[in-house]
Image 1 (tube, helix red, strand yellow):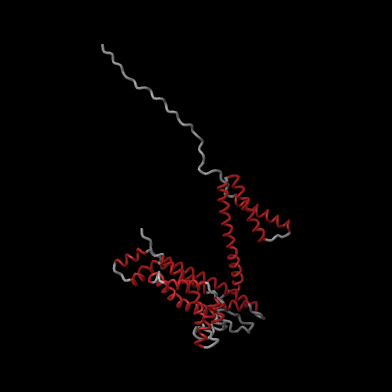
Image 2: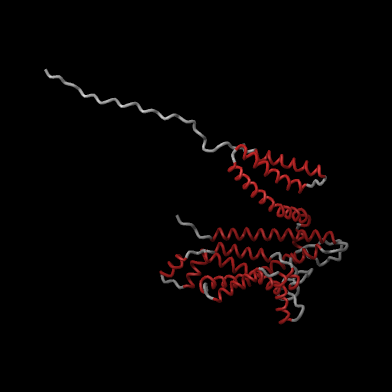
Length: 369
């Protein structure tokens, strides 16, 4: 008889499961979101108490010392709960935020002061009347003459500065990028960027005095003085924008047989138009509030003068300066008029920036898929 023996495989030992360790959270202990507010309140309270004990309490001092105490408290609490690395991160974060808010304080106080004082005379009469009847006590004064003069002189400065600045930047980037002439032009543009505004006014005054006689004042002379200040800004900003255009776009245009001037007009300038417009707007914002060069060149006139080529022309910055230094029976009214002029200047600059942003958005090159 046959004995069949079946071979049995040796039994494999059962795998031991690894001990289950408690899962640690990805992030360690964290402070509640309201901790910074509590530490800030404690810091301000401690600072106020210290200054009261010293007898030198002031609101500005309380905020300054309170922020320092807040940074110390927040760092200590974060180090105790979260660890040293999150504490350092929080210290850097709140330090940067504090300096940012500190930088906003002068801007906020300036806007608050100008708006509260200028809103008193920001009415229809301000835009429709002049200062022709300053000697009459029963006549309300306006600043139409200064507003029109500012727009005329700024428009002339724009017409002078933009072609010169744009063509200079095109030469520096497209034609004479590495020539000695281009290096000299860049050096002179950098020097012109930092010249005082009164120097530009004296230059325009001397130039017009040579041809039209001493003491000549006109809106055109003021526009020339402002152009000296605006051209460097337009040149530098436009040059940097043209440098950002990829060379591949130029080479693709040249490969199709397109001439250089058409490549600049059809490829380079449309691609960088948004940045160029921004630079021009910055240049206008640079000059629209200048006072010193316009005092020397355009002068001050209490009547409306729409001819920028003859006679003194009043502008908003000069009117603000003259109004705020007025003494006499109508000094308070003239000062209110000056604050309204300052508010108008701020609104003009903001409006120009909004227009520039819209144009930059409208004509920016569309991104492909």
